[in-house]
Image (cartoon, rainbow, N blue to C red; front, side):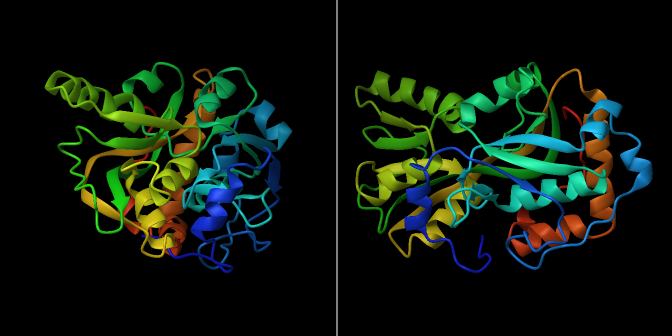
Length: 300
């Protein structure tokens, strides 16, 4: 589910960038060729929608965005080791451009982004956050995409990994994700009761979890479906998807609870991008059309 721009970003490169120092980068516009996954898109400011942006943010002009750039193809570091790219980046850059704003992307640990938004380090978090009740109690979340969970194992599935019966397996997962916090715990409990426990290996970055399966350090991994599909494609046959995609749920942009006006403006911008075809153009360019939605909302 994700061929991309030239040069191709190989799995080896993806696994390397996790060790690089955190860096920030900005995007002045979408017309400068910074797009990925296809041709860069032109987005015109909608002055009516721009007027919805809170005055303080409009004067600031640039949105500071926290993103965990280890989650290809959604968000990851480009070959320069600094620039955050991915379909999440392209889509939200279009949202910002529609509102007359620029973006500055900062690579951050996934489990630090929500607290960073709450503490005003970031104006938003854009990092494949699945919308759930716990997160909605902390921040506003604007739905923009739909994804489920998928498992993957080494080529040929030598350990006979079954997502419905993972007892006895060593399973790699990114810490802080819904897979780590919601999916695995009941499975761990059930396997413990059976006397055949799961060994869960939590990693800071998804690239590290993927590497654990590639190198044989883990029997399986689980992650959001676009991430697994991309990892399988880029692994050149070293890993394969196992089982069906399940528990599909929307992703949400993370916005401070008090910034309801900004959240409403982002919804309106997404609706405008859907109407003019830009939303579909970006996601189709990344082969992510299966995740498109048409019911953008605050805290759905």
